[in-house]
Length: 71
Image (cartoon, rainbow, N blue to C red):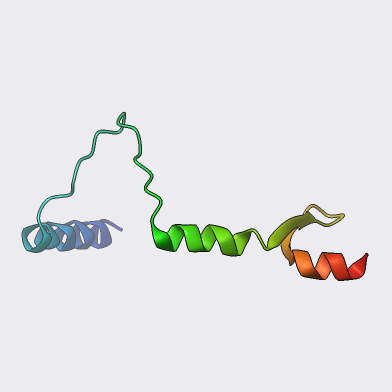
């Protein structure tokens, strides 16, 4: 096990020299959430789905059009 760990540490040390050190961000800083065109298109697509739960507690998505056809 020690050989595997030392091999991993050696690999990460070499990668640090290639890619630079890991970025350390401020964990207390708020996350900035930007709404771009792609995200707005994705949200529009998701409005066509409803999340349903079956009797065993599994969640799944159903298209709204399919639900309207059933009623």
